[in-house]
Structure formats: structure tokens, C-alpha cells
Image (cartoon, rainbow, N blue to C red; front, side, top):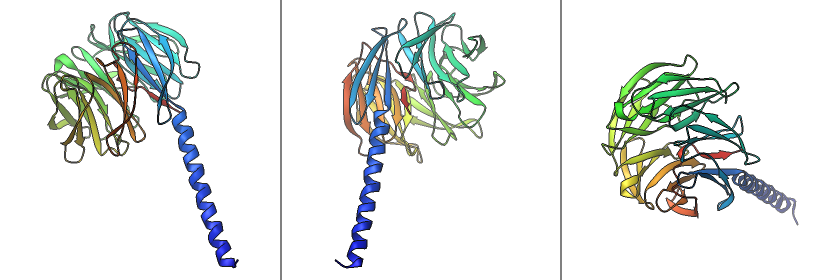
Length: 325
């Protein structure tokens, strides 16, 4: 065999080795993915692993009527807001055990955690405030943010978080360090779900009464577009590259796919009954159907269903619910 042929074989083997290692790393990463589902009707959190297939790991009893959920990679904890027992349940990601419960005075819904894992932010639906909790001392304060606050999105780049105030038809901008309101942007009717784009230059807000999405330019702090979607849009997430937004429409049993350059709906996907929380991991989106009581995974490349699994009763998943090492 010539030296040239040996060289070609060597190159092929090296390329194959890199491909194998890449696939192995990808599979390992997927295997380390955990999906947490808040089951409002059964007072539990279902935990699934995902390795191109959903596998139930555990059902964890929590408070009464869990709805909101947030994940901290820094703390390796998951935070669950229990709307009827006025508490936040803290779950250890590794042991899948409840570590503690943080008592509140009102009714919690939207929930988010700071990037450094030091503060927890909870929307108190009844007391019209954003509860800011020090996760070391559990000391907390109440910051007024309009009427019936719901969804929360925390910036990883700026000293800001954003709260949808449903009955005020606005989004409040809060300084996370100073813990004070620094702005307010008017949006559609009854804003509920809220999420930053991957580049964090825009904020998408679901308006459940006007059946549309408000898009906020965060540099100028103003609404720049309104996109009509299905009935009762609930939550929103994005593809990893940020080119598409995915909106769950509760009363239409559908998901609106929005082009984030043109701000136009480019496709509408059929979901199960009453889709609610939705989140992204890699090239996949995960969402729950409240009435069908299931978790569904869709590949964002071809918009096809990859897998689905039965959850507990009436899953909500209001927030970010995927943990990945």
C-alpha cells in the first residue's frame, strides 16, 4: 500500500474518531437533561430525563397547586411556586429531594432566580407585588409592580428583570440590585407570559385577552410590534438561534411559530388540549398540555414531534423548567 493511501486512511480514521466523540458527548449531554413538570391537580412535580426519549425519573410531592417553576444551575436547585399553599418548594436537582419550603404571605405564580443564584423573584398575584427573597437568609421584601403580576424574565446581561402585570396591561422593569421599579411599558390586554429573546434585545409578552404578542424593544423601552396569534396565548419560548418564537395558545390548542425578523406568524402547529408552559433545550422545544396531561417534545428543525410522556394531573410549567449540566 502506498504512503498516500495510508495517509488517506489515517485522515478518515481521525475524522471518524472526532465524529464518534462528538456524538458521544451529545448523547451524554442529553442524558444529563432533566425536565421538571408542575402538576397543579395532583400537587406533585414529575421529573423526566431526556435522551432523545422522555423517561420518568420521579414524582415529587410539593405544596398545593404548583404552577410556576424556575431552575438555577448555580445552586443546582429547582423552585416551585404553589399557588394555594403560599409557599415555594425548593428541590435538589441531584437527589430529587425537597430541601426546604419558603413560606409566603400571598399567592405565588411567576417565579425566577437571579443568574448568581442569590435572589429568588416571585410574582404575588394577590398582593400585587414582586416578592424578592434572599436565598441565604430567606429574608424577603414586597415591591409593588401593578395589578396581578404574572410572568417574570430575568436578564443575564443587565441589572434588570421584567414582570408582566396582567390587570395593569403593562410590563414593569425592575433593577435587580437596587430592587426598585425603573420603568414601565404599556402592552396588550392582560399580559401574562413573558420571555427575553436569546440576544436579550427584545422581550416577547403574551396578551391573553387581546390574543396577541407584544414585542418590546428594550433599548428604547417601547412596544414596537403586536403579532396576532391564537386564542389565550399563555407562554413563549425561542429556538436556540433566536430565529423563531413559539407561543402556546390555550383555547386554540395550537402553537404559533413566529419569525423573529419579520414579526410574522409563519406557521401554526396543532398541539394537544390546552397547551401551557413551553421551554427550549438545544434543538428541541418542550411543552405541556394541561387537559391531556402530557409533556411533548418537538424538534425545531423539522417541527415534528419527537416524543411525549404522561404527566401528573393538570400540568402548568409556568416558567423555565429544563435543567442541563
